[in-house]
Image 1 (cartoon, helix red, strand yellow):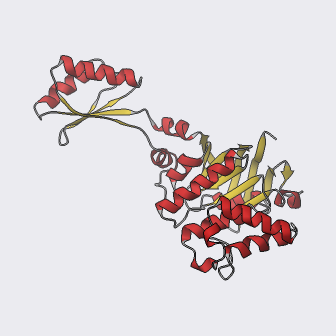
Image 2: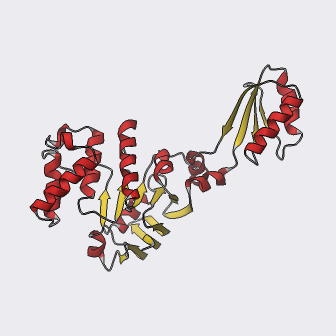
Image 3: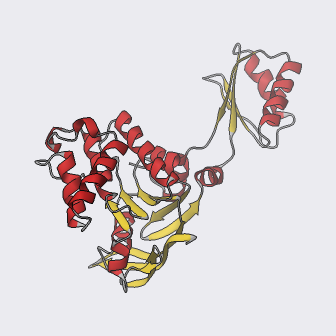
Length: 313
């Protein structure tokens, strides 16, 4: 299948709150879609509908080629779901957790044990396999939770804010594990409040706000929509700032922005390296010495704030 997840006009209402108000997006097989939005925007509701935990009030959705309303059992056989908090049993060992899930999924005890061993090794948990999960660090619990979602080798994985509360090292370990899954052909729908997580993992991003998808594209496309890269130039000596500003303004398509207090001039970059070279040439001709050049690119945080009017988090 070329498309692993398809949502068309999804609606869901809870009493006086319209959680989903016509959500549309599609996820290609073997890719990651990052679903971003402010708190209460409808991200988790969308995941619950697509994973058959909620029935939509309207619209249509398919996961792995099956209708989430008419064929929920077929959908469930092909998906894994990791929520915001680890759902493993703290009293059992890591090995026991994974083996139990395999048995409940009718793999048979021998195959369940074999699958548990594979996943413990894949997620670097073999050394802690026989310790109670209550002794695991947060990062280890999250890796075990992700492994638990993969016991049945799902084609589609839903990750609802999977790295919440993790330290940077544990978060990077989790990200690398997700990348390896995608390289093996798993399709991932990721909701997250960490925009660097979406930037690192997602092939495409859908921004949802008040129950609607308000923007879609690759991370770079969303960043470019905010505005172009800017070149920041700090010159040597306060007396040279005016000369530098005049020199850079001469051929600029857009007037530079001058910050006299910092001694920095910000210039819109229209043609990448060519713009940097042109700025350097203009300053050299004007006899201005440069203390520092830096290129400032729009971030996903900038794009998120521009689209939703809010900061992520």
